[in-house]
Amino acid sequence: MGTARQRAASEEEYVAFATARSGQLYRSAYFLTGGDAHLAEDLVQDTLGQMYTQWHRLQWPSWAGRIDNPAGYARTVLVRAYLSHHRRRSSAERPSQVLPEVPAPEQDAALRLALVGALAQLPPRDRAVVVLRYWEDRSVEETAAIVKDSSAAVRTRCTRALARLRSLLGADLAELVAR
Image (tube, helix red, strand yellow):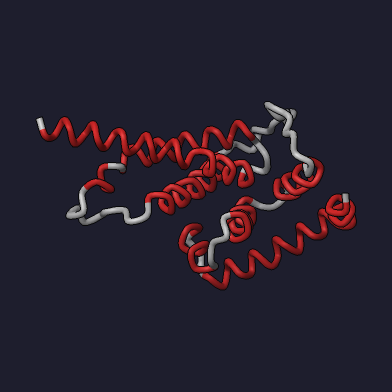
């Protein structure tokens, strides 16, 4: 009977975790995918599915593979799912049109769209590094661990990706920010 109670409690904790983190995971996935809302939703679902299968590790401190930071682990799973998806994607697969599901009532919609469009033009690993470093506010070392790269490579990617973003946005960025 105690085992059934433990499973029920574990299930409730997972549901609370997934409910609390899904919005933040979606926002990160949205930026990683360059504004592809549907792919972002798929990545979040994949992430939460993988988290569910590993959730028992969170419940047993004596387990050797215990996960100490479930939110950090979820972000790592999300980035790796994104990179894995991009490697698997067929070169023939191209979205024909990007339509937002619900228009955002934000004042900076033009700026957000410009930034998402520019992010979409970066290579996947560069985009992942930029999102982790500047959206997630991760350190170079954390970012390197997540994308399985060296700290020097992450710094180089950041520098090159930011230079590319500046060249893509050019004078448009100053005009959009001034509004």
